[in-house]
Amino acid sequence: MRALGFDMKKAEVLKILQDHDKTGHGYMDFEDFAKISGGRILDRDPLEEIRRAFQLFDGASKGRIELKDLRRVAKEIGDRLEDDELQAMIDEFDLDQDNAINMEEFLAIMTDEA
Image (cartoon, rainbow, N blue to C red; front, top):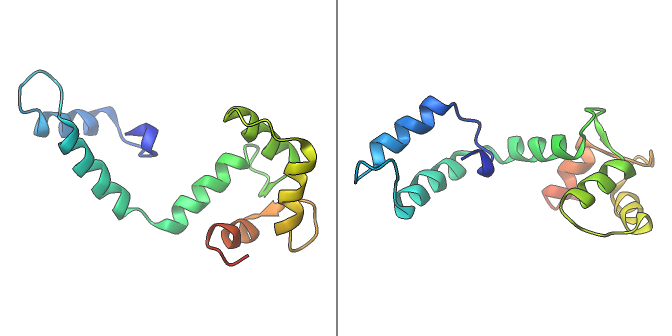
């Protein structure tokens, strides 16, 4: 569940597992897992999800995404983008021309309002 972005306590996960363990072996089938996780995904607040994504890019909590942040994320996901390509991303969406993407600009990108 954490891999899907749900911050759940171990006790909560164990309770869900207990409620859906049909065999008593400590497992649930994929169908039950899909129903549970799918329902939780639909209950999420889209703006909160965008804010969480911004925080993943803004690792130092500066309130802005800079070239070094994009470089770090690209490296973490195994993407080999050059700095000029990453800078072009910033330049395209940097409305206030401060050479970074702030939360407002990020929201515009993620909601197709850019």
